[in-house]
Length: 490
Image (tube, rainbow, N blue to C red; front, side, top):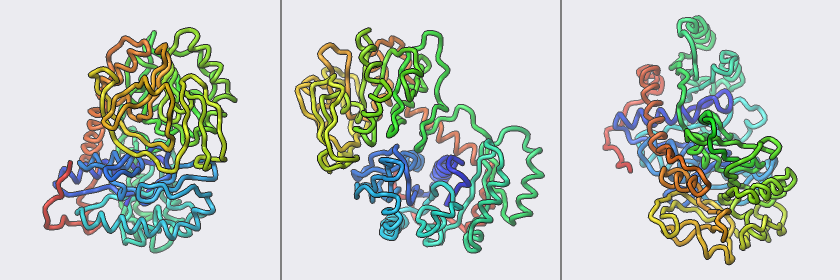
């Protein structure tokens, strides 16, 4: 199990690298994260949803994502409440206090998934969440040491040296663990190192003498590495905009979800992407994209409070284009009705009235991977749907896409406004080029997003193979591959 001294220490990255490394060895390996809190999710082969990092790790294993790989997913609605998803399906909204009491039940779901995967695969690589040294969260923990103790799992502790304080992070975290948890830590990984490794050796020697734990790897800072971010909005992969670059503006709303939709645009050499909390932060735009949202009505209210509705109206008057994705698509209609209070207080909100349609939020969440073409064209598109709302109205008679399950989205009569429920709609280069061409960008240079992701995973595994002492790691875990054939992968 990989646990981190902090969030973003490199847990997801290391698990991804380990998954691909052991897949190369012919081992049937799968990822596992007991509990995840993230607004970025992916649709699974069994019709559920899990964190996107676990979907990327499944790909590193040559597998399609399954809900057992992340049995508990928490999707925040507010600072104090979250949608609780168990085995890929929505359970209910709970406050932080309610979920703390629910952890005993959630733990059983975690152990059921662990047992099912353990029966199918020769090796499971587990990712922790946040830090195991969060004292206030130790009681009933199922995300870090509580899980490791329950299943008797050895732990690697990873820390990010690029942020500074790496020795304090590692020693301090270890000191805050119980005696049995300290014994469970088999060694350290130091992540994102830059410079001359010889200058680090005195610190490594001190760390090993102080803790009695070996440093299993010092991983270098990999520049220009592409991997999807698990949760926090990342602009790490954004290209430096060329002079005259096509400018895409995305309002950064409080419940912004599935921001990985914009990774292909950030990687596009002819596009500049700006995530702005206020229209005052941008001078203008060629294309405005309203993103997905976990709380559509409250984000729509914030959109108006910040003056984005006025900015959008001016943008359209001057001939600009506007695209809505999922929750952003719902905002484009006449109204959004939440009669059951699924995303907040019950009630109805007036939409931006740019498409003639209405949306009603319903308890059954639509979860599916899908593919098709642009409506009336042969240009391919592919992605996934994760939404509660059902939209209806005359606007849908002029759809944006024709998918396997039927038509999707809408385009306004004047062609300036379009929307879709499809996440990942920029992932295919052909689809990205077509959408940018519609918006007025004539540079057909969209990157091959899937190839970049695969190249990033391969580069990670190469780096780990070079810098990790696998003989020591496997000796410390007492691991030897079982004598059984590997499970077929995708």
